Length: 271
Ligand SMILES: C[S@@+](CC[C@H](N)C(=O)[O-])C[C@H]1O[C@@H](n2cnc3c(N)ncnc32)[C@H](O)[C@@H]1O
Image (tube, rainbow, N blue to C red):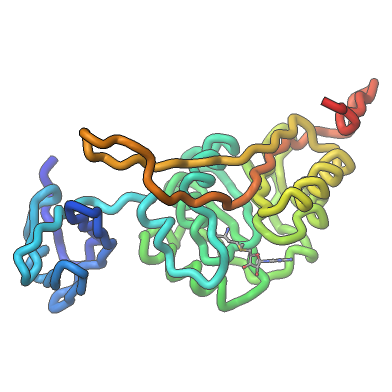
């Protein structure tokens, strides 16, 4: 259905040939400066999504709906953030669905929080713990910008003091020492459901794996997501020269009740 841009809409503008792009909140009298000239917000109001708009230098931008992938990688940040390549796999691995209760720590800049809140919908809830108030406030502003702040309960607390929630559909930990908080994550997570963890180094993965076994998690997976973009010139299709080489390792594990009767020591598998 054709829809027209209104005041306060979030729009995504994209310009050929190099893909200069911006996510803009449209305000009367506003202006977006770009390498290709200025876009006046007043020129966007009333235009249909999908149409072309022009800078004061006559350079074209297409006027698109913003998408959560573009948004999450551009959030204002004061911390390391989770990137869409990892977030996409987290969403499917943790089985995030409309109506889900998701608990995470730390909130950081709210890149993951905003995407989780997008996917849990108005019937779901994200409870996001962060020990530093300034980061929590920033994440709140980022979620406000995407229009999902009402789906998030921001809690300012050191997670050493535990989570309030029980029976969560999913829990995610993105903090430097997740192995110290696995029992707390287990308390919050419904049995049978999954915990996700991101850590940037292999040394941390080792500690996480030992901790998961100790805290009786099962179905443990470790993965790394590599994403390589390609040039889109149809006569010269090849990978882009640069890529994000490393973000972190993703660990997923399921919350089980106790240990199996005949315990198999999976941690000593030399393969
Ligand atoms: C890498 S950032 C999280 C980034 C976030 N996932 C995002 O996508 O924007 C890690 C955050 O964990 C917070 N943190 C570290 N230890 C914590 C603790 N014990 N309790 C609560 N928050 C903690 C830090 O203050 C920091 O903001």
